[in-house]
Length: 211
Picture (tube, rainbow, N blue to C red):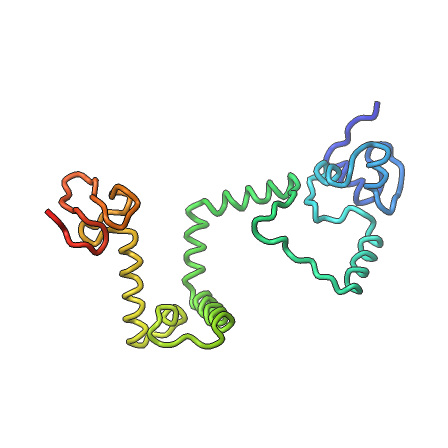
């Protein structure tokens, strides 16, 4: 009975294009041999080696030949886009888990916030916003628009527009009468009664208080 190779042995076999189960080789495409004789396809072979599915496991000359074919054809590899499920290897899943755990840490959040507040990051965000507006509308942003304020303009008209936008945004989340969040008001309509204790508020958002 052939013993199951370890992860290190599978990786060494891929690098040398030698079969880690029977020792035959070297091969041009190791996965063809393992699929036919040992029932281990290219995805399982990468999983056993702890590699991502985008990692090449064939001979270097074969990989380069295939890259040259792609370059000559003019094809460009693009992302499948949002909403498209991708098959990830165990190594890719582990990498994603590590990134997610790091992003959930307080140190990572503070570092991301600090990086987003730098002048370079703000300038990049402003340029992206201007470019997106020109692409969608076919012209530059006009003064008196809160989006113009986000791009870095600090004229009086843009300041007034931004202040108005922020007030309206806060009004959608908090009652202007009592200051409680919308979750404290029953119902899903714009007008409701606040359910917070010891609160005389009777209207949601801009409605006057009724006692």
